[in-house]
Image 1 (cartoon, rainbow, N blue to C red):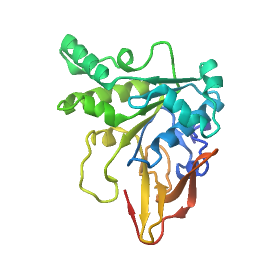
Image 2: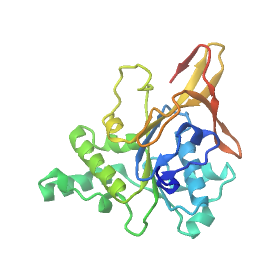
Image 3: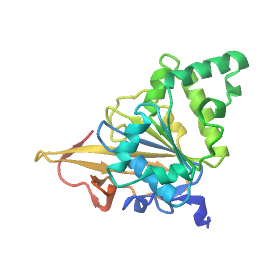
Length: 256
């Protein structure tokens, strides 16, 4: 039996019951969903929970500025100042186009795509995180528009770097349709689904009676036994993201 410290617990109410022993340390997890589904709040919530346990967390934003993310966090009663002061938390905004240009320069210099060094391109040298959250993968993919093969090579190198350094990563991706419930629509950067060790979709749910809700599931998680069910979830003021692992969706509904 593997030791407990080989697994990561999010401490998000109800969610860890879906992941068995937990999320294996050093794995790359894709968190995907449509606009307003709660992807960012889910990841901010687990980031703050990790800091409380003394883990070093790097939240990399390619969309929202740092002050806006801190504002989101404060609305739930979480305070980033303490953890940033202790060097447990770094919230940093990056420019996806700068990343793409840096990769282009490295490829031109190396002449061989497999010689890319990820750390100087993406990970700050002065911060060694236990957990990295990337928000969002969609923005990075857009910066590589027309260069899907190079984007995939870059992501392979990134995943390899994170795994070799035992960094658990969560990569947010916005999707127009849920890709795991029978749709044929293929999102940009879909190849990352095959590279990732785990996939956590968060859904907007539309019921026949007009009610709108949220749901979550764990589609895959290498190295642990998962609970296979689409269950109810919610975002509660002053509390954060909450999962109801024993409330599987029932009735007629549409997932988006």
